[in-house]
Image (tube, rainbow, N blue to C red; front, side, top):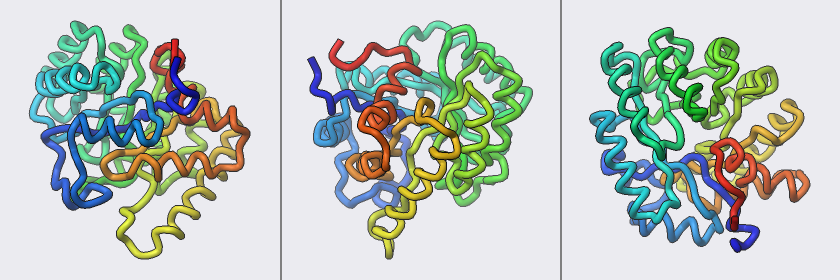
Length: 284
Protein backbone atom coordinates (compact mmCIF):
# COMPACT_ATOMS: atom_id res chain seq x y z
CA UNK A 1 0.00 0.00 0.00
CA UNK A 2 1.43 3.37 -1.02
CA UNK A 3 2.00 6.00 1.63
CA UNK A 4 -0.52 8.89 1.46
CA UNK A 5 2.01 11.29 -0.02
CA UNK A 6 2.86 8.81 -2.79
CA UNK A 7 -0.65 9.29 -4.14
CA UNK A 8 0.61 12.44 -5.78
CA UNK A 9 0.43 12.39 -9.57
CA UNK A 10 2.17 14.91 -11.86
CA UNK A 11 0.20 15.49 -15.07
CA UNK A 12 2.86 17.57 -16.82
CA UNK A 13 6.38 16.15 -17.14
CA UNK A 14 8.84 16.24 -20.03
CA UNK A 15 11.64 13.79 -20.78
CA UNK A 16 12.78 13.52 -24.39
CA UNK A 17 16.01 13.35 -26.35
CA UNK A 18 14.55 16.20 -28.41
CA UNK A 19 14.22 18.62 -25.48
CA UNK A 20 15.78 21.96 -26.61
CA UNK A 21 18.72 23.62 -24.86
CA UNK A 22 18.55 21.77 -21.54
CA UNK A 23 21.14 23.96 -19.71
CA UNK A 24 19.09 27.09 -20.43
CA UNK A 25 15.63 25.66 -19.92
CA UNK A 26 16.09 23.43 -16.86
CA UNK A 27 15.52 24.82 -13.38
CA UNK A 28 19.11 24.12 -12.31
CA UNK A 29 22.48 23.32 -13.81
CA UNK A 30 23.62 19.71 -13.88
CA UNK A 31 20.11 18.27 -13.88
CA UNK A 32 20.03 14.48 -14.40
CA UNK A 33 17.71 14.49 -17.41
CA UNK A 34 17.06 10.76 -17.49
CA UNK A 35 14.48 8.27 -16.26
CA UNK A 36 16.67 7.59 -13.25
CA UNK A 37 17.04 11.30 -12.49
CA UNK A 38 13.35 12.07 -12.87
CA UNK A 39 12.22 9.11 -10.77
CA UNK A 40 14.69 10.09 -8.04
CA UNK A 41 13.19 13.59 -7.92
CA UNK A 42 9.68 12.13 -7.94
CA UNK A 43 10.56 9.89 -5.00
CA UNK A 44 11.91 12.86 -3.03
CA UNK A 45 8.67 14.76 -3.70
CA UNK A 46 6.54 11.67 -2.93
CA UNK A 47 5.10 11.58 -6.45
CA UNK A 48 4.02 8.08 -7.40
CA UNK A 49 3.53 8.51 -11.16
CA UNK A 50 2.91 11.04 -13.89
CA UNK A 51 2.24 11.89 -17.51
CA UNK A 52 5.17 12.36 -19.90
CA UNK A 53 4.12 14.91 -22.49
CA UNK A 54 5.80 14.60 -25.84
CA UNK A 55 7.23 17.86 -27.12
CA UNK A 56 6.53 19.63 -30.38
CA UNK A 57 10.11 19.13 -31.59
CA UNK A 58 9.59 15.36 -31.92
CA UNK A 59 10.27 14.46 -35.57
CA UNK A 60 7.28 12.16 -36.15
CA UNK A 61 4.23 10.59 -34.57
CA UNK A 62 6.00 7.22 -34.74
CA UNK A 63 8.89 8.64 -32.75
CA UNK A 64 6.61 10.05 -30.03
CA UNK A 65 5.12 6.58 -29.60
CA UNK A 66 8.45 4.75 -29.76
CA UNK A 67 10.18 7.06 -27.29
CA UNK A 68 7.14 7.10 -25.02
CA UNK A 69 7.03 3.31 -24.92
CA UNK A 70 10.75 3.16 -24.15
CA UNK A 71 10.34 5.55 -21.21
CA UNK A 72 7.20 3.81 -19.96
CA UNK A 73 9.06 0.50 -19.77
CA UNK A 74 12.23 2.02 -18.29
CA UNK A 75 10.17 3.69 -15.54
CA UNK A 76 8.33 0.42 -14.77
CA UNK A 77 5.03 2.01 -15.68
CA UNK A 78 5.36 5.21 -13.62
CA UNK A 79 5.75 7.56 -16.60
CA UNK A 80 2.70 7.28 -18.86
CA UNK A 81 3.04 8.03 -22.54
CA UNK A 82 1.37 10.53 -24.86
CA UNK A 83 1.64 11.60 -28.49
CA UNK A 84 1.11 14.75 -30.52
CA UNK A 85 0.29 15.99 -34.00
CA UNK A 86 -0.28 19.42 -35.54
CA UNK A 87 -3.06 20.20 -38.03
CA UNK A 88 -0.53 22.38 -39.85
CA UNK A 89 1.07 19.13 -41.05
CA UNK A 90 -1.99 18.43 -43.19
CA UNK A 91 -5.03 16.17 -43.16
CA UNK A 92 -3.09 13.07 -44.22
CA UNK A 93 -0.67 13.40 -41.29
CA UNK A 94 -3.53 13.91 -38.83
CA UNK A 95 -5.28 10.82 -40.21
CA UNK A 96 -2.06 8.81 -40.00
CA UNK A 97 -1.54 9.88 -36.39
CA UNK A 98 -5.06 8.84 -35.43
CA UNK A 99 -4.57 5.46 -37.14
CA UNK A 100 -1.40 4.86 -35.13
CA UNK A 101 -3.07 5.92 -31.88
CA UNK A 102 -5.93 3.50 -32.54
CA UNK A 103 -3.46 0.62 -32.22
CA UNK A 104 -1.76 2.03 -29.08
CA UNK A 105 -3.62 0.58 -26.12
CA UNK A 106 -1.59 2.32 -23.41
CA UNK A 107 -1.80 5.88 -24.72
CA UNK A 108 -2.68 8.10 -21.74
CA UNK A 109 -3.55 11.35 -23.55
CA UNK A 110 -3.06 13.43 -26.68
CA UNK A 111 -1.14 16.71 -26.45
CA UNK A 112 -1.62 19.68 -28.80
CA UNK A 113 0.63 22.73 -29.16
CA UNK A 114 -1.26 25.83 -30.33
CA UNK A 115 1.07 28.79 -29.97
CA UNK A 116 4.09 26.73 -30.92
CA UNK A 117 2.30 26.02 -34.20
CA UNK A 118 -0.08 28.51 -35.85
CA UNK A 119 -3.46 26.93 -35.17
CA UNK A 120 -6.32 27.47 -32.73
CA UNK A 121 -7.74 24.63 -30.61
CA UNK A 122 -11.03 25.01 -32.51
CA UNK A 123 -9.33 24.45 -35.89
CA UNK A 124 -11.72 22.23 -37.92
CA UNK A 125 -8.76 20.11 -39.09
CA UNK A 126 -8.54 18.71 -35.54
CA UNK A 127 -11.94 17.05 -35.79
CA UNK A 128 -10.45 13.54 -36.24
CA UNK A 129 -8.30 14.05 -33.13
CA UNK A 130 -11.25 15.02 -30.97
CA UNK A 131 -13.40 12.23 -32.39
CA UNK A 132 -10.63 9.75 -31.54
CA UNK A 133 -10.42 11.16 -28.01
CA UNK A 134 -14.18 10.68 -27.66
CA UNK A 135 -14.05 7.07 -28.89
CA UNK A 136 -11.19 6.16 -26.57
CA UNK A 137 -12.29 8.37 -23.66
CA UNK A 138 -8.84 9.99 -23.57
CA UNK A 139 -8.11 13.52 -22.31
CA UNK A 140 -6.75 16.06 -24.79
CA UNK A 141 -4.09 18.25 -23.19
CA UNK A 142 -3.69 21.63 -24.87
CA UNK A 143 -0.77 24.01 -24.41
CA UNK A 144 -2.01 27.44 -23.33
CA UNK A 145 -0.29 30.72 -22.58
CA UNK A 146 3.36 31.65 -23.01
CA UNK A 147 5.78 29.58 -25.11
CA UNK A 148 9.48 28.81 -24.79
CA UNK A 149 9.80 29.45 -28.52
CA UNK A 150 10.36 33.15 -29.27
CA UNK A 151 8.94 32.52 -32.74
CA UNK A 152 5.69 31.13 -31.35
CA UNK A 153 2.50 33.18 -31.64
CA UNK A 154 0.67 33.32 -28.33
CA UNK A 155 -2.53 34.62 -29.92
CA UNK A 156 -3.24 30.97 -30.78
CA UNK A 157 -2.81 29.89 -27.15
CA UNK A 158 -5.21 32.14 -25.26
CA UNK A 159 -7.62 30.20 -23.02
CA UNK A 160 -10.69 31.83 -24.55
CA UNK A 161 -9.91 29.99 -27.80
CA UNK A 162 -10.57 26.67 -26.03
CA UNK A 163 -14.14 27.64 -25.16
CA UNK A 164 -15.50 27.00 -28.67
CA UNK A 165 -14.07 23.50 -28.97
CA UNK A 166 -15.15 22.61 -25.42
CA UNK A 167 -18.72 23.49 -26.37
CA UNK A 168 -18.50 21.69 -29.71
CA UNK A 169 -17.13 18.48 -28.15
CA UNK A 170 -18.92 18.18 -24.82
CA UNK A 171 -18.02 14.49 -24.48
CA UNK A 172 -14.27 15.16 -24.70
CA UNK A 173 -12.28 16.12 -21.57
CA UNK A 174 -9.78 18.91 -22.20
CA UNK A 175 -6.85 19.91 -19.99
CA UNK A 176 -5.96 23.60 -20.27
CA UNK A 177 -2.24 23.43 -19.53
CA UNK A 178 -0.25 25.98 -17.52
CA UNK A 179 -3.51 27.53 -16.23
CA UNK A 180 -3.27 29.66 -19.38
CA UNK A 181 -0.51 31.71 -17.75
CA UNK A 182 -0.42 34.72 -17.90
CA UNK A 183 -4.18 34.65 -18.62
CA UNK A 184 -5.19 32.76 -15.49
CA UNK A 185 -8.37 34.76 -14.96
CA UNK A 186 -9.47 34.00 -18.51
CA UNK A 187 -8.63 30.32 -17.98
CA UNK A 188 -10.73 30.30 -14.82
CA UNK A 189 -13.78 31.46 -16.76
CA UNK A 190 -13.31 28.73 -19.39
CA UNK A 191 -13.08 26.06 -16.66
CA UNK A 192 -15.98 27.52 -14.66
CA UNK A 193 -18.23 27.62 -17.74
CA UNK A 194 -17.32 24.25 -19.26
CA UNK A 195 -17.67 21.09 -17.14
CA UNK A 196 -15.46 19.14 -19.57
CA UNK A 197 -12.45 21.45 -19.12
CA UNK A 198 -9.73 20.83 -16.52
CA UNK A 199 -6.67 22.95 -15.82
CA UNK A 200 -3.15 22.11 -14.69
CA UNK A 201 -0.78 24.13 -12.51
CA UNK A 202 2.41 23.46 -14.47
CA UNK A 203 4.99 26.01 -15.53
CA UNK A 204 3.68 28.96 -13.53
CA UNK A 205 7.05 30.10 -12.18
CA UNK A 206 10.16 31.68 -13.70
CA UNK A 207 13.53 29.95 -13.22
CA UNK A 208 14.82 30.14 -9.62
CA UNK A 209 17.86 32.11 -10.82
CA UNK A 210 15.82 35.19 -11.75
CA UNK A 211 15.68 38.17 -9.36
CA UNK A 212 12.75 38.30 -6.94
CA UNK A 213 11.97 34.60 -7.33
CA UNK A 214 10.52 34.36 -3.81
CA UNK A 215 8.14 37.22 -4.59
CA UNK A 216 7.09 35.43 -7.79
CA UNK A 217 6.26 32.30 -5.80
CA UNK A 218 4.13 34.27 -3.32
CA UNK A 219 2.33 36.09 -6.12
CA UNK A 220 1.62 32.82 -7.94
CA UNK A 221 0.08 31.28 -4.82
CA UNK A 222 -2.23 34.31 -4.57
CA UNK A 223 -3.17 34.06 -8.25
CA UNK A 224 -3.90 30.35 -7.90
CA UNK A 225 -6.06 31.00 -4.85
CA UNK A 226 -8.04 33.69 -6.70
CA UNK A 227 -8.52 31.42 -9.73
CA UNK A 228 -9.74 28.49 -7.66
CA UNK A 229 -12.11 30.75 -5.74
CA UNK A 230 -13.57 31.95 -9.05
CA UNK A 231 -14.05 28.39 -10.32
CA UNK A 232 -15.69 27.50 -7.02
CA UNK A 233 -14.22 24.06 -6.31
CA UNK A 234 -11.03 22.05 -6.88
CA UNK A 235 -12.50 19.06 -8.72
CA UNK A 236 -10.94 19.95 -12.08
CA UNK A 237 -7.64 21.39 -10.83
CA UNK A 238 -4.64 19.15 -11.59
CA UNK A 239 -1.15 19.42 -10.13
CA UNK A 240 1.62 19.59 -12.73
CA UNK A 241 5.22 20.79 -12.65
CA UNK A 242 6.52 21.20 -16.24
CA UNK A 243 9.73 19.45 -15.13
CA UNK A 244 12.56 20.12 -16.03
CA UNK A 245 11.51 23.78 -16.12
CA UNK A 246 10.33 23.63 -12.49
CA UNK A 247 11.58 21.54 -9.61
CA UNK A 248 9.04 19.09 -8.27
CA UNK A 249 9.24 20.29 -4.63
CA UNK A 250 8.67 23.89 -5.75
CA UNK A 251 5.69 22.90 -7.91
CA UNK A 252 4.19 20.84 -5.08
CA UNK A 253 4.73 23.71 -2.63
CA UNK A 254 2.42 25.94 -4.70
CA UNK A 255 -0.44 23.55 -3.89
CA UNK A 256 0.58 22.94 -0.30
CA UNK A 257 0.69 26.71 0.33
CA UNK A 258 -2.95 27.21 -0.67
CA UNK A 259 -5.51 27.88 2.06
CA UNK A 260 -7.49 24.72 1.34
CA UNK A 261 -8.64 21.73 3.33
CA UNK A 262 -6.18 18.80 3.33
CA UNK A 263 -8.59 16.65 1.33
CA UNK A 264 -8.86 19.37 -1.32
CA UNK A 265 -5.09 19.51 -1.65
CA UNK A 266 -5.02 15.72 -2.02
CA UNK A 267 -7.49 15.96 -4.89
CA UNK A 268 -5.34 18.52 -6.69
CA UNK A 269 -2.11 16.63 -6.01
CA UNK A 270 -3.37 13.33 -7.38
CA UNK A 271 -6.96 12.32 -6.80
CA UNK A 272 -8.41 14.38 -9.64
CA UNK A 273 -5.77 13.17 -12.10
CA UNK A 274 -6.29 9.51 -11.27
CA UNK A 275 -10.01 9.94 -11.89
CA UNK A 276 -9.46 11.86 -15.15
CA UNK A 277 -6.99 9.39 -16.60
CA UNK A 278 -8.94 6.35 -15.44
CA UNK A 279 -6.28 5.08 -13.06
CA UNK A 280 -6.86 3.14 -9.83
CA UNK A 281 -6.31 4.99 -6.54
CA UNK A 282 -2.72 4.83 -5.33
CA UNK A 283 -1.97 1.66 -3.41
CA UNK A 284 -4.75 -0.36 -5.06
